[in-house]
Amino acid sequence: MTPMEPITEAAYDRRRLRQWLAGEARADGVARRDVLRLAAAAGLAAAVPIALPAPRARAATAPGIVKPLPDDVFTVRGTNAETRFDALADTGHLTPASHFFVRNHTTTPRLDAAAWRLTVWGDGLTGGAREFTLADLRRLPSTTRTAFVECAGNGRSLFGSQQGQAVSGTAWTLGAIGTARWRGVRLAEVLRRAGLARGAVDVMPRGLDDDYVTADGTDLGRVRRPLPLAKALDDVLLAYEMNGEPLPPDHGHPVRVVVPSWIGIASIKWVGDIEVSTTPLYSPWNTDFYRLFGEHHPAEGSPPLTRQTLKSAFELPWNATLRAGARHRLTGRSWSGDGAVTRVDISTDQGGSWRRARLHDVPRRGSWVRWSTDWRPRTPGPATLLARATDTTGRSQPTTTAHNTQGYLFDAVVRHPVTVE
Ligand SMILES: Nc1nc2c(c(=O)[nH]1)N[C@H]1C(S)=C(S)[C@@H](COP(=O)(O)O)O[C@H]1N2
Ligand SMILES: [Mo]
Image (tube, rainbow, N blue to C red; front, side, top):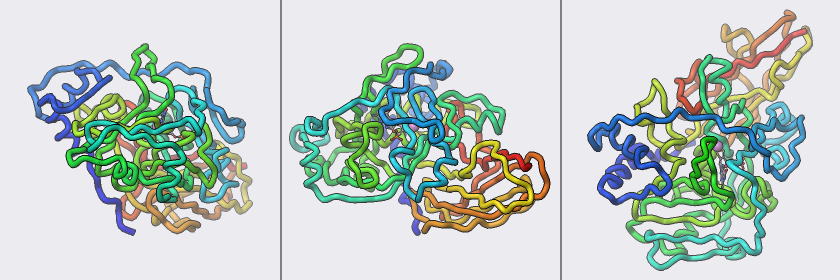
């Protein structure tokens, strides 16, 4: 397997900033201060001291999720629902829609597929705006691929529980991920039919759900995030099927963007329009959010986050009870945004010794592998299970993750507590 083609937001972001300073990039709905902060730190303008407001956790609201959320499958967190990893033990490689986590900034909109239109517009097209119905998209050549969608904040609560660090945002454990088989049309195909101009640089899909209003009352507009054209033309899908069925309401019905291996926010649900621009674009989702801030990162934050990191999870409840003397089959999953997971090591003695788990899937980029190992605990008392994945880039999960204020991209080996009785 070859590692993914590196499409770096880092290099592109500097260019985008330079253009913004020259009045050539647009940042509608982004505070001027925030873009200035980025530019200053990138050495593109005189340093401007800018105080950022501390990110605040959002108040809990009614979920607004359509599908049932049984307690044994989901943990509800505000407007979101996290999958319980132990509930995946009975599922196969793919996550059934009934078990797939939901991350909603607001509420799931109920859209009529027959009335739905996708508008592709902007000065990055050779002609004018183009509209596509669902039937139009279905008539175009289709592509099917398996890919996980994972929230950038998946594992966030472990910064607190495992590293004693404060972070803001939804307190996910490890269940803000699901893997599905997506069928749809390549975004590249739709852009080509819409008439892509030579000078196009950014593509910004936008959802049809309500405006997102932060806890302090700021209306950030509809959920949207620019994608560099290079990624948009690479492996991005406009998906209308999930695991062989029309997309369910909570996962973007009738059409969502799927950006394999990238953080979940890139995969815009309920897409209604896509701006194609010759001018670099900003949204709050690539400025204030989804960059790394904090003492280990540049003052202006890291470049916008793109690929997911490396993680593993046991398909066991937290604090599960296991019988002493019995042989237990420990199962779990590992995944990486950088390449396929090729190896998983397990420790049941706090990292004193490691043994290799059996892999039950062919390692593939953008997907996860299931694994298992057997364990016969002898001594009653508390124990800790560790799983450490290694991917095709040679990277293994570290012992700790450098802190960032919004708790993104936790990749450290998770210490999973169990009790032996
Ligand atoms: N329109 C829209 N798209 C969206 C979101 C949203 O709230 N609105 N949430 C994003 C985030 S942060 C994630 S992690 C994924 C979650 O996808 P899922 O709910 O299908 O699991 O959708 C992304 N796309
Ligand atoms: Mo997310």
